[in-house]
Image (cartoon, rainbow, N blue to C red; front, side, top):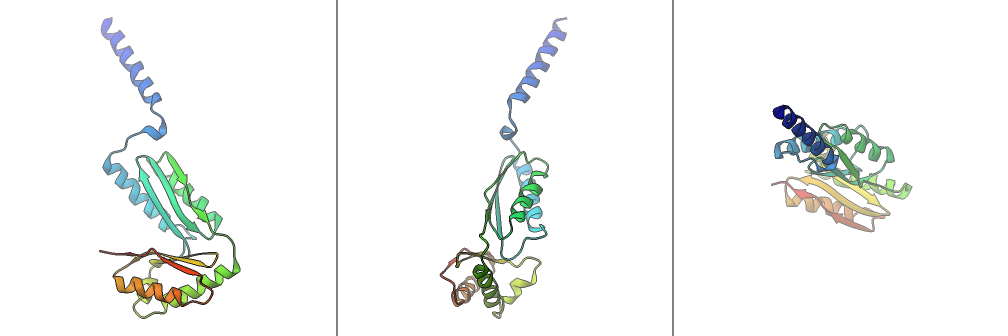
Length: 179
């Protein structure tokens, strides 16, 4: 009888311990976190309206994913959160994505900066992917370049091209150079 009682008590303590552990408290192995990271990246870059004029970033911390960046369409912000929530092992999504204001002037600058960058010999190769690797974010005439290029020269040429576009107030070059 005492073995049955101990088994029952151990079962109750296990259930109470699992319930006391909230959804954000679950610890995930490094391998599990790496899997979530790969899946989050895949889901974000395959969103149907994700374009060169949007920038999505994320951070995985256990079972919590924090989304960052800026998008031109409000639906892209909600779509990103929705697809990440569906990933197995993700219990919480913090959506810090900024929706850029609607502005015909900013739209014109986006197109002009795109043409200026991707018409450069050598930079045109970055436009051949489904989502080009240099992203152009424009907010109130201020341009931020993000993404990745193969070398410092390409990063500098993209910066010079964007600075030469009429109507651009400033250019912040956050392009990463791939190792």
